[in-house]
Amino acid sequence: MPESIVCRFAPSPTGFLHIGGARTALFNWLYARGRGGKMLLRIEDTDRERSTKEAIDAILDGLRWLEIEWDGDVIYQFARAARHREVAEQMLASGNAYRCYASPDELTQMREKARAEGKTRLYDGRWRDRDPSDAPPSVKPVIRLKAPLTGETVVEDKVQGRVAWQNENLDDFVLLRSDGTPTYMHAVVVDDHDMNVTHIIRGDDHLNNAARQTQIYQALGWNVPVMAHIPLIHGPDGAKLSKRHGALGVDAYRAMGYLPAAMRNYLVRLGWAHGDQEIFSTEEMIAAFDLPQVGRSPARFDFARLESLSGHYMRATADAELVAKLEGLLPHVANGTEIAKRLTPAVRAKLVAAMPSLKERAKTLVELLDTAGFLWADRPLPLDDKAKAVLTADARGLIGSLAPLLEAGGWTAAEMEAVVRSFADGKGIKLGAVAQPLRAALTGRATSPPIFDVLAVLGKDESLARLRDQAG
Image 1 (cartoon, rainbow, N blue to C red):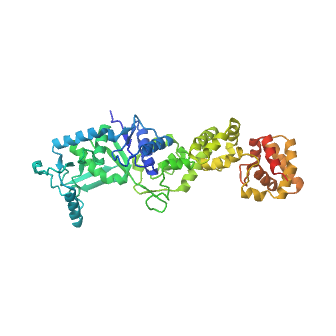
Image 2 (cartoon, rainbow, N blue to C red):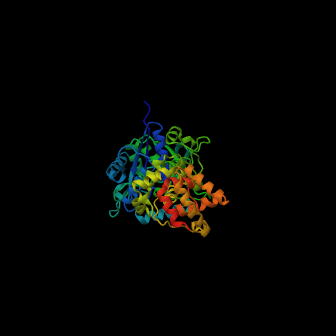
Image 3 (cartoon, rainbow, N blue to C red):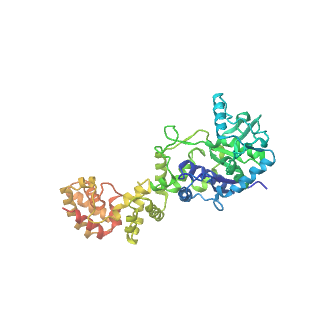
């Protein structure tokens, strides 16, 4: 029976879930789901000074918002420190590791000498074969890997291809610090082995770690997982992604009003391609995703593309679902608490009814919320500057004359349009000369969904009251 696929996402909780981490999680999730496997979540919290509960909560919250699910319980690396020490001791016993008693001053001198000589191997191996009885009593030793001195360490990477390192350039790196805590390099290998991880998919900033981790696997006689190192994300200008490009926490994209489905679709296309297809349902992503289609060049972040995709998903989402997502956004926007109070069942019903028109133009939930604000605004309606400019004395006079005609007619969009067209024809003016003042009076703005849809959604009583507020 073929081996079951096990992937993992293993973030360090020293900050929020950033966009690159979210893409890594997505790639792992898609690869595992597409092959009937599992994706595990491991929080690499061995850096106790920098790891915070707030960051852990933000990572979990960000994954849940993106609807990326992990299998089983969250694993916390720090809780496994005893196991990491146990394996390091096993390596000592088997001769694959040794205790190093070099002092901080000695290590500094070694590094300076090696750098001056242009060497990449910074530790000179002085305790590699030395008798521990020579150990100075005042120094607590670290445990170092007894790495091979000749030959090469090779990773057959599923994205980068064959990558080889000359062993003479690799250090006998530390597995266990002098206080007994494991290094990241060692803990990762032990955890991945114990969690039966078969595939490691991560950013190519970890590619050099792959050589060292492979050496630990080989020293222990363990199978080395399949590795795939995906290029990092750059800004539109080709420079390393920074906050000005969009290197924000996933929570920031939620607060900006992007839909989770749009973010997933955007992230999957950052560095991966499936022919010319741009739009993917979750099921299509799971079925199509594979590692050979991940490019070797850095992906470029493009806000315009994200907005375009987001607009597509806004239009494709059911009206009632969009309203629910708007309500989910409210805790994350500045005036969300006040808006939530105004979303009575009656206003919510109006919002659902208005959604087909509202979502046509909006690219984000924040834009949608802004455009829909007229539905719950207080009377008299506040007017923006453009609406004030539209509502001249003549325009207010037109509204005053039109209101009784609307009141006397039926209240479907078609019936109201017939009344307004007849009114405009009678005045010898274009329809827009009437529609624009109507829009300003009903919404407080110069732009809105189609004006007859606005009248229909607001209802007869509310619409006429707003028109009378502004009539000349």
